Length: 119
Image (cartoon, rainbow, N blue to C red; front, side, top):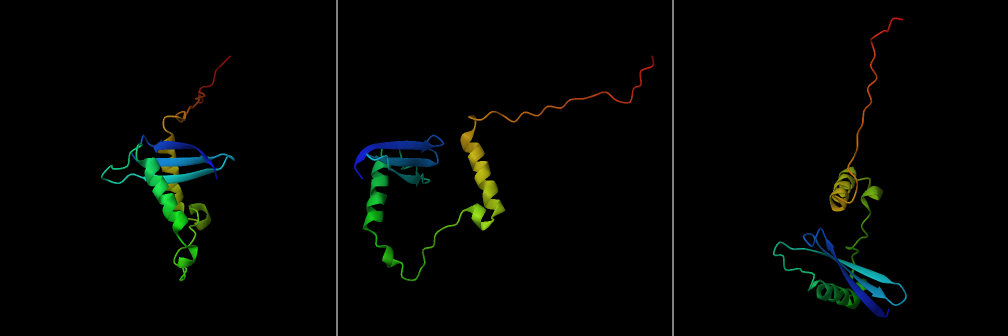
């Protein structure tokens, strides 16, 4: 992959962390999600360096090191049937999209009943 660009995308203005996207010449995109620690040491300026470090560690790792099968693929909350996690993910998605979406609108119509008109 020939690297042609890098993007740093803040999550909730950088409060939750950053997503770093490495863009290749063939349209490939590799994303690394970095979560902020309590010490706030992660910034937009050092996010690319941290993501590169993670990618280097990943490239140097040997998948056969997991002889005991300790590492498992994580199933999505929907596949696992975990309603609590799905509810949390929905709430997080709503918070992340606010105020981009329109607020919920509830309207009611009333039709007077009970009165009979005499002609």
